[in-house]
Amino acid sequence: MIFKVLLHAIWIALLTLLTQVGGLVWLIALVVGKLLRYKWPLRGLTWLLFIPFYCLVSFLAVPPLARLSGRVPLPAISNPQLRPENIWFCLLNRHYVRPGLLRALEEVTGQMQNRFPGTVVWYMDANFPFFDGYPLEPHFSHKDGKKVDLSIYWNDAGTLEPVEGNPSPFGYGVFAGPLPGERDYAAECERKGFWYIGLDGDLAAPFYHADRYVFDAGRTAELLRLLAGHPAVSRVLIQPHLKTRLGLSGLNKLRFQGCKAARHDDHAHVELR
Image 1: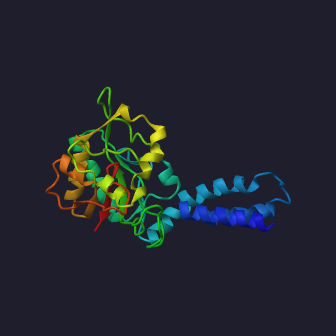
Image 2: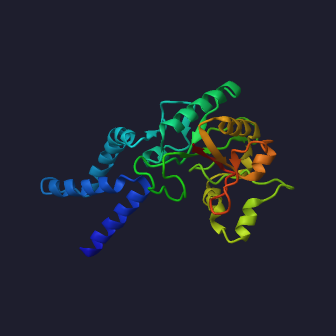
Image 3: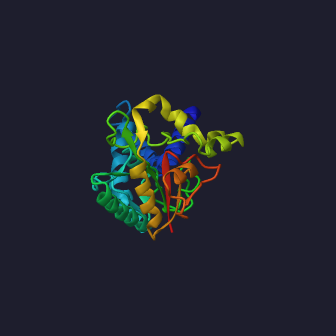
């Protein structure tokens, strides 16, 4: 009995860590399942209840409640040019931002269409729907509704045509690393003991073939330029070698994230003022 309670406690903590609301939904499913089990003694009843309960809470209850907290969801399917890199970012409730950040992203997305018609702005982790200060692991700062990670762009190495989304199955970890002659800040950070800054690359490596993709400097440079030029954006974190390579050294809003955070040559971190 104690072991079973411990397992439920660990699972509730994990769901709360990953989704913010999942632990509460699991508790509800446990209580309702216990009440129904006398009439319907089905194996896996808690899971059968949890999945629809979680979907109802996440898609019907959380968005209006999040608005009361000053946060709105980024579009999952409603805007074909502003989309999640992976639908799991939405299913896990990690796609909430302040309304001002949503407006800024929509405006930048529209500007990208003028320069590169059909281009999608792909977002990844943003923030949870509730409570400033609530951590969005493994990030240090995604806890106030003002942060979002955007994917950089890639082309097919054979055709040089844009690829759909990011080669990584979870968005992070496909690096546009430094070229010969460019300063390798990530390697310097690792030598200082920050071994984890490239961990995303190790996790992504088994799931894609690096030689099938080439970095799209043109679209990435334009996206960074538009973000840095938007008055609602306070700063954009990007690896310094990309800032230099793309000819964006004069943009003061483009900054190095330092060694404590993961490397940023697989995505750009955008912050609202």
